[in-house]
Length: 203
Ligand code: SF4
Ligand code: SF4
Image 1 (cartoon, helix red, strand yellow):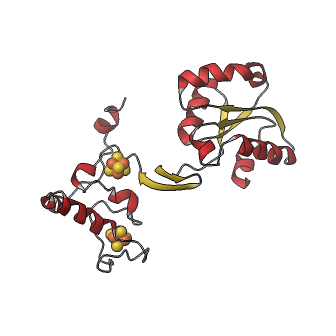
Image 2 (tube, helix red, strand yellow; image 1 turned 30 degrees about the horizontal axis):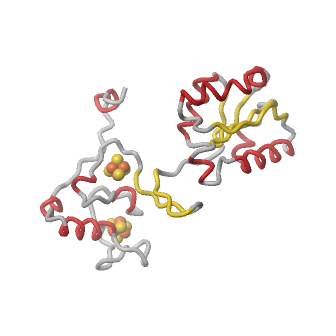
């Protein structure tokens, strides 16, 4: 809240958008969290112009339809606090032309175990290496984010950082062995390509 209030400091009339999809399931941007945000910002002396939950604020087709419900209120809004992942925040900013304030910290792309329990499996690195790693993402699952590993600290099968977990490179190797792909252990991956050529690929 402190970060959000700092970001909203210059703005008096605030709208709040929740995400009824992923952020709602994660309990970071559902209707309850929108209400809590409204309460906190009111206590901070802000005027709340509207609150709305949009099914998927990252989807332009849905955003265009749903944002019409607060079209008039938006005109009198200085900034919009968005309780969604960074994609939703930016999509709303681009579409409305308003100052947007990110209300959550997006961590990773995850598997849902149960509501409120998520396992990070991907960082969206744009150069997927799963075909050569036994189907596990080492850069996401190794606490040091190693592309080539293991580090020198691994204790046999266990990770030196999380002693109760297996080193992900060991899991990777066991999977490769299981699939008859052990030769992949010799592959050294290059660091991610951040060149203009690589960025253009996505435009
Ligand atoms: S290598 Fe890992 S972070 Fe990159 S796309 Fe594949 S699963 Fe995602
Ligand atoms: S032991 Fe394995 S998983 Fe743990 S930090 Fe080292 S390389 Fe990463």
